[in-house]
Image 1 (cartoon, rainbow, N blue to C red):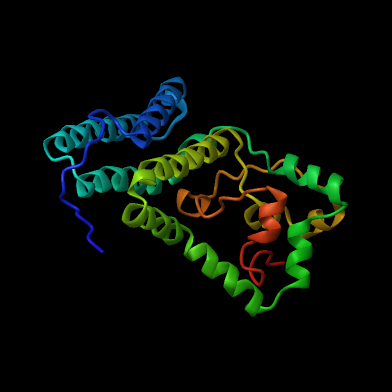
Image 2: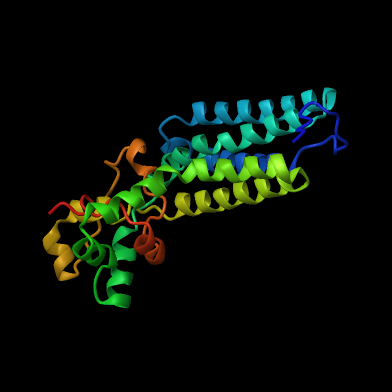
Length: 241
């Protein structure tokens, strides 16, 4: 199979769609930083990072004009997708400012199901052979996305940019939800309030600001019931009472 990585391709000279959506998200979060400037931990550094990202995006666009080929297109899009690892923990810097809503989501689930699905799942499936495949699926989360994108790059280059745009846009939608709906999920909230409260269906307001950014980004599904049943945290460790 001839890849023709450095063969000149006819394409637009402006920004790719994935770069446009990244700049839009960059701008929206920059405006949010300005509004919350006094309450944020390091707003100047965050704004500087965004300036660097925007500058790098336009620089890559300029370099692509000098050598428009498959390889340079891949580099442009791959860099934007790799920035997802920056944008994800970045959401913590925003949502820790807003009031925690774990008690609201736990109360809604208690009302809907008469209990907590996360607790039921842990009680019924404590086996390692159940938890380890979920862990493996979580570990391969980003590699699976990478494999899909690379497949389109190699075999359907005409759809490569569109697929990358859809994936990155979906992530940015999730990130905006994470910013404005600050919840940590049962893995952190239940141990914080105690097993007695959980068993009784009592969910007090509890600040989760003690969770560091390194632990916060590990809980992408938060309180959404269906994903929690399909992709829970490790069943043997999700609730340590």
